[in-house]
Length: 112
Image (tube, rainbow, N blue to C red):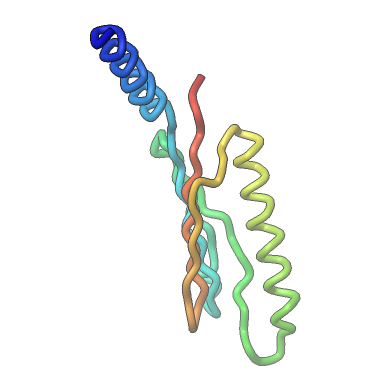
């Protein structure tokens, strides 16, 4: 009985280990700032390929801040939906910032 339990436990651990190794990750760093050079999304895939997606810079004078934030949010939503279409799920996301917004998204893609 002990041998069967040990074998079953071993198979479960091996299966869990194989499953944990069959996930690939991509990361996205999102910068929203007053500078056009800084306002962007930097996306890196598990292969090392990368792309930079432009975002609108926001200013506090002369521009409707809501319009800029909405347009940037549309771009971020498009990124998340495009990644989902490629088989990625959002595994983790966090945001911080005072003078600019910084977000980090970890995408996971399960391999079959």
